[in-house]
Length: 187
Length: 187
DNA sequence: TTTGCTACCGAACAATCTGTTCTCTTTTAT
DNA sequence: ATAAAAGAGAACAGATTGTTCGGTAGCAAA
Image (cartoon, rainbow over all chains, first blue to last red):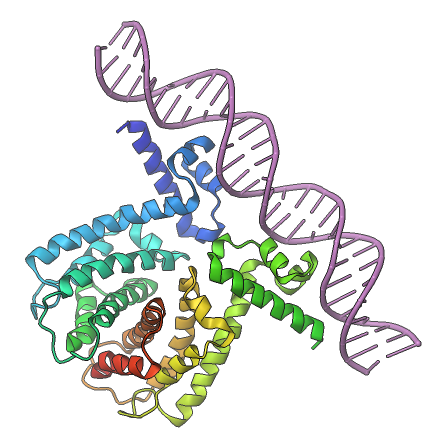
């Protein structure tokens, strides 16, 4: 691909991320992104049809990496099915977040964090679901699997939000411990 | 208070709700709300400073009722502390939602549902926290209470989202059963 | 190196939305 | 009945959006 395209795309993503860190998504204008990225107006619209389109592309870029990295992780270790595994997908995810690749923490702690968390949860849901199949569950046979999957990914995402809003004072390992404490009893 | 004010305020809320049911919050313009509510431009701006302001007022109106009704409920029954209580605050909340007062279901299943869910969770957090004090917990003394509170209200809200997205096929009592199954083991 | 293709720039545009100000009319409460 | 309050409606400047156009510059392949 043309280097110019990559350069422009990166500039747009960076500018957009930086703007999201300081103000709400709704209040960011395309004009601001253009100015901040230092590109021409037409250039922006040749890359993205709309601001929503840009958001979607950014999310796919962000969570694509994280989730695919987590999927690799599930190949070696299971979800939490292999009980008391020292490493888990969730711990892996938390560490990945902590590394703050592409300033994902900045986005998740921004005013518009819900948007990203929703994307995150949707991605996570697929991951959890794929791991849930053929799993030897405990005695919760009267609880729909569908519900449990949603509960696990939902709880995880809410925990991440809580973590970030509290300025990430806990280590990934500590969080993983907390999460096990509330999730393992029901799996 | 002047009847005209009430009438106008209601008209705005209704129009806004109806618009939210069909399109995303971001894409709704003040002009549309004005046209839909069939009021004058100045009238809108004499009631609300901005669209965000309107949203906030709507949420306070919505969740104010629900939460205060739930607080009454906690006076007679506890949260889940009194184990195997036939009625619980959560069940009460679910029933209240199901009644679809003020079309709250329409809003929670709209494209912008996250916004409302976030408001809902924040309200709920206070409620759960007030109930958590002086509660005899089980063996989770190494898990921060802060985390547990967030886990409970977060899980509840995620469950509601799951419920609504699945077209509310379960009864409040069933959902309450599911929720107990994933929450009671850790309290 | 040359050539053709592609991306980018910048100006200008019509259309829309916003928030405010003004005057005038209608309704309410007392 | 009257004064106060609320609404209607027009008009406004300013900003944002998405598009079009002609011109410039960089890239890659021959």
